[in-house]
Image (cartoon, rainbow, N blue to C red; front, side, top):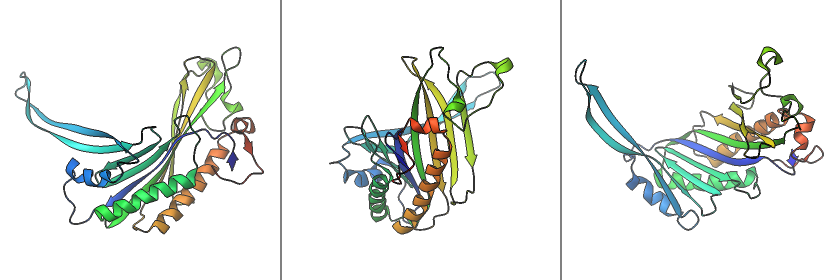
Length: 263
């Protein structure tokens, strides 16, 4: 499936690992040595911490009292200056994503190659025993012009969405739909979050499609195993994307059925 104007805003791959028996407690001191090797290409660092507080009530009419509290590291994200490449490191987790940020979407193969490079570095550094699961994520943003009366028919562009009777509800203003499709033929569990957003100029309506394909029970550190599973997940996701649109909807992206190059 080839699109001249793919609506991809962000795409990423997340990994969860089974840790080494010699794993150190998760902390910034543990995360930093791994992330420092990417300082040249991903120089900006964002740290997310969580405050955990234990509070109990002193009496039936008393003021709650803080008994204890601590701050722990949740995750660290390093990214480039242009905010197109992001590496997220958490406790036994790692994710890599590419944001469009006004530029051209590079394609799935580039994402896969760059993510697997980080995957191999993670294995060498942290020495996990196995990969528990991987998740492929796409975020698409579709802008559709409004008609002169400010309305549009969802079914003219989409084959997924909501079906509400015009009477007594009237036109739909905002909506959010979540669909989960477990145990698909490709072996991945697919989730679609579909919702709309208002644009500042009110001349178009923006529709967001968040795709999540979860590959479970990988039980391997082999790049070949991951490539096979993620390739299948990607093929299935692209098929679902295509079937989500009418011909008029696909025309928004310059769809050419004669081209076979994948998005």
